[in-house]
Image (cartoon, rainbow, N blue to C red; front, side, top):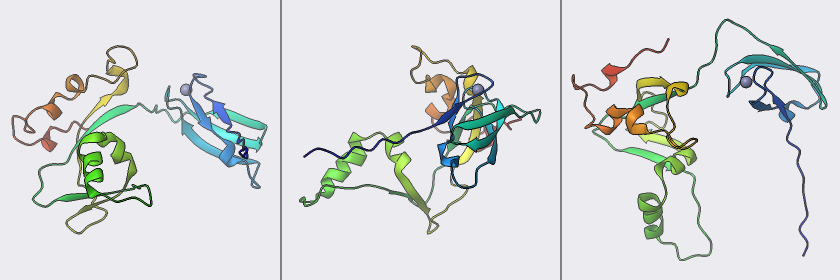
Length: 185
Ligand SMILES: [Zn+2]
């Protein structure tokens, strides 16, 4: 049979500072127009602007300057050695009916998929009976994205060069990773 086709329009505005960054605005098209939004900051240049949504075909932008600029960074966090386990509740699934094998999931999470993939599906983290364990990860250090080289163009940064302490033995000279934190200005 022929599929029913649905087309949905996604509307973005371009950043007035760099013309590269864009932000979605169609979620603002509703009965409350005309409406204001922002200040928003551009993911590309860090410039800020305010948005006036007059109608679904008429949106105005004005620069917003609070004297500060958003600077993108890579932030190193660490979960220091724990005495008790840390549990991750992850959104998953399986094909049903199916002879369900835990073995399949053990392989999937243990060997097949990258942790950075399943981390995006985490619904909750549980530590010592607490399903919202603030402070489980400690801030170590931050690096401006603009100062990080991407070997081979758009590829991943060389994380070993950016955060060598993360690839060491988990100890700094004074034996305390968290103590190495450099306050961000
Ligand atoms: Zn921009």
